[in-house]
Length: 172
Image (cartoon, rainbow, N blue to C red):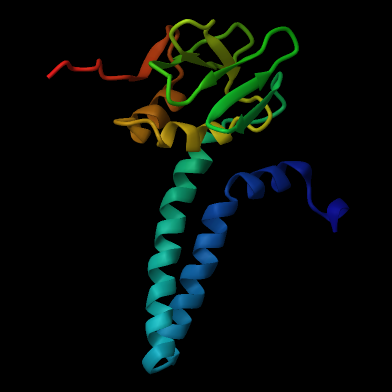
């Protein structure tokens, strides 16, 4: 079956996999709710809600995935973002992050710039392998605006864009 599907089509389906799964769950739930009674119909309504949430989050994740084949590999382990690049790499702690930026790069693909005080900034290409893991990392940051990030990815500015900045600690 691998040879029957074009690579571009396979990549497109893989990018939108959560949306396709959500639509399938939504349709199954709709069928159960429409053709059944009692507990099975209630389960169908539950599947409809689950499918709708999966479609919504899947659309956001698909918009976040800007491509693959970029330089390096992203790994997230023990609340630490690790980037293994061909020239440079490094790691930052998720709890210690103070700034997330999207910066232009000469090659066309933009880079995430993750800043942690006392460490070198970590530059991660948006099309690096496993860069989609950053979607979940950004989701745990307090006050992070997903729509702002997605619109910045879509517009791809010629200058660095601050996506998120940690609120300063207050004394009282």
